[in-house]
Amino acid sequence: MRNSTKRKQAFRLGAIAAAATIFGYPANLDDGDRMQRCRTLVRKKDRPNSSIARGCRYGKGSSGGRWVWQYRTGTGLGFARGVTSYGPSRGVADIGSPHFDRAVRDLARAANRAF
Figure 1 (cartoon, rainbow, N blue to C red):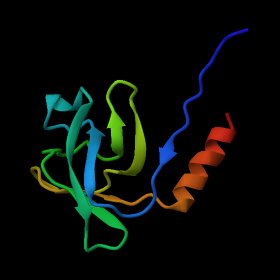
Figure 2: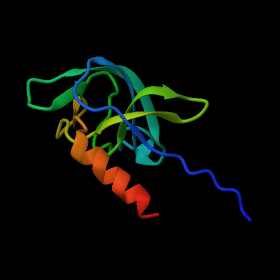
Figure 3: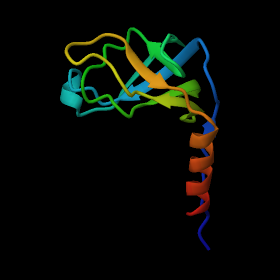
């Protein structure tokens, strides 16, 4: 019998202003060939249910990268709060993410039960 460890994704819901680790494959860094990791301050945005991050210098290709609070390098664990969803059309500047809500958490839980 094989031993297998199933990791569950932990979520934190709603808006928060705090440090986060943001992952992505931006084309402007290493031609998007390597995953990048940036720790930066995330703050609420005027846009409803949204946050922005400044300082990662992520350009095109970083969309879909996870935003993780309390990320632990040794374990690779933390709390998913969002994903990079918008940013500048040219160059690098602020990137943004909608906040994960109950619907996202419930969808992930249902998908995990399917496996």
